Length: 538
Image (cartoon, rainbow, N blue to C red; front, side, top):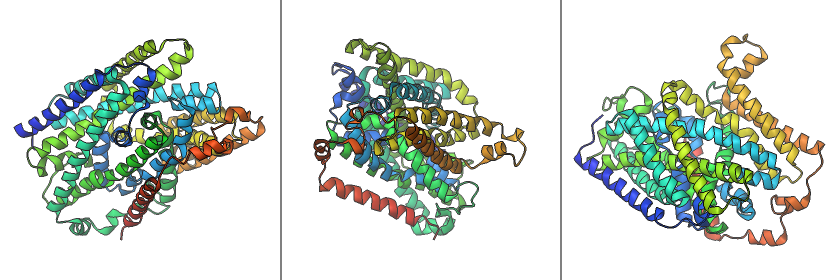
């Protein structure tokens, strides 16, 4: 890898100056209450909402890992990157219910729809999961990226990034997060798009790329008998994980709740869905280009995860290389800022305020800042543990989503579509689902100690995508069965929270969209279908 030169460092310095100038401008605006601090006063426009959704999703480890999937013959993984249609579900299906209920958090919505017990359970589980996975993985992977890009010590890179991001998140709250994320999304897209076009030019164009690697390399649909990516399980489980992540996870949904109104929130989700189409072309394809250049003897790297940084440092001219490096740093910082703010919101609104409901607004904002500081501290403490975890286990953390998502997806999805689903069914599904998901992780780690062919060995070694699909079906059956065997909820409590309990006035207010929103959504769906058809190995 070529090291960064003076012009690259100038570009990176300008990026940081603009970023912190923007953050300072937001911080100097007075934060009046919790709505201001956690949801930016619910006054954000669609462009910033959509850019924030995109930037929250794309971390530096995501960029490097996705390019690694492209370079490492894992083309089926791109199904997780063309889930723009699931982001549309957030805007068209889920967001109207969230916006109407006026909630700050997803656990708070569960309390409105079901019971306080469901809210407590999801709050605690989400908070612990964020700190152990999202915070730690992002910090660790970010430290690796920063040290590789800037040629500095891993610890210096990791801690400096955490502290810098923590400062503007603590003082600026959600408003600082969404505005800085908009800048970071723009930098990331410009830099990665430039790398893709320059890379394609070096390899000789798209036709030459396919000819070098062979058409079959571009097949994302493996047969049902494939041990790693059987296509039916891949499609079903990726959709389950997608609905959980894009439509019910605080980390993403909180961005749409900052919108001025439902119309702006929905348009923000549509804009975010459009941006979600880009990673396939600007992150995954560079990995494929790096592999083709390696086969031609024009590039050299040891592991697929090195594909993006090596391609960037060798192909890009001085200055532009610095811009892409700034984009990778932007991706890291935006993901960190998002998870810091989400953890702070969950703790303050769902735990502290629940225990002390009479706390003044200004004190809740202070508690939110302290909570962010604690999360930053816990993240730094967790770095040495993450540094000792093997790469295999890091990849393994990604599959954990298929064990966490099914019960939560089932509860939110059926909770909105089927009014007979009650609090007892929801709580039972969340608790039993969590126990089964954690149980699967435990037996998977102990799989070698089970007799081959036994039930436990079969469950432990079952493909995680196949397990996720069957697990979701189990959760649906459990949720419906328990709900039907116990008394129905009072319809007054359900008013406006399910499709079956919407008033005529609420239905008419749902028409907060125009033909432009519908046309944009249809175009996004058409592009998703085109990508699915195109990557078929022919």
